[in-house]
Amino acid sequence: VQLVESGGGLAQAGGSLRLSCAASGIIGSMNNMAWYRQAAGKQRELVAVIRRFGTTNYADSVKGRFTISRDNARNTVYLQMNSLKPEDTAAYYCNGDIASNNYWGQGTQVTVSE
Image (cartoon, rainbow, N blue to C red):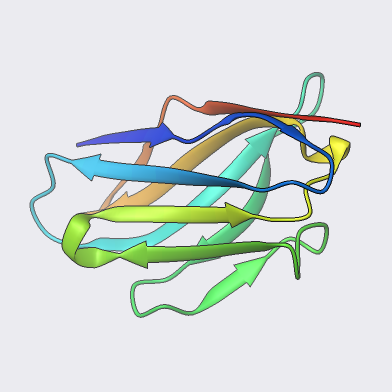
């Protein structure tokens, strides 16, 4: 199983980016899927999680600005990020519970300028 993130890049404050996480090599279902982020010099933190049947939770810092969603038919999870702030700058990682194992993607960098 591989998780491959895409969609990161440079954005201005107030702008938007959409991250994608495509899972390949799956036999079985994606269960809980999540996005984490890690800023330079800081610990990795949970940004958002979406469970198999669609319930979601968000970090307080992103509530109302970020939306996590999933397309089970495409084995893909998305993170729509709106109203970006410089403090959202970090490497963003996809994480997934798939067929009783836990997997991480390689990360995608998001940089938000003033």
